[in-house]
Length: 103
View 1 (cartoon, rainbow, N blue to C red):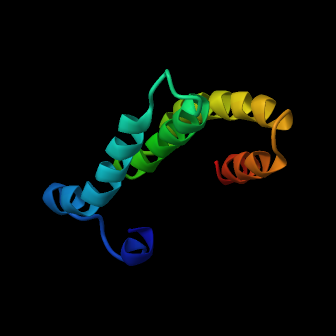
View 2: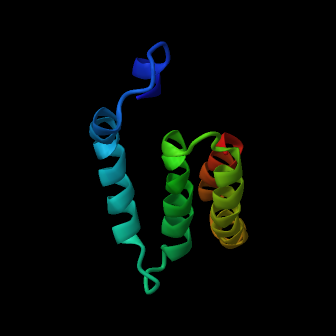
């Protein structure tokens, strides 16, 4: 979406909703996978909380305060995953470091 819209004016509300439908569907799918009984709950919660950052395109006038509120939630779960994975496997740690570097 960003690549296609970088040089264009902000779309009207209806067009913006259409552009955001695939992102919204992906966010709903991620959120639906969160199950506290799952062994992967912290992993899923980390991705779901981080996925909420994708809503920044709808925030006006500036998304910085919104992102400042959202990112710590994802980091909390990322830290839990890191503590777990340090005792199990290093490959999971690599994916968490990648996500943390993107935020």
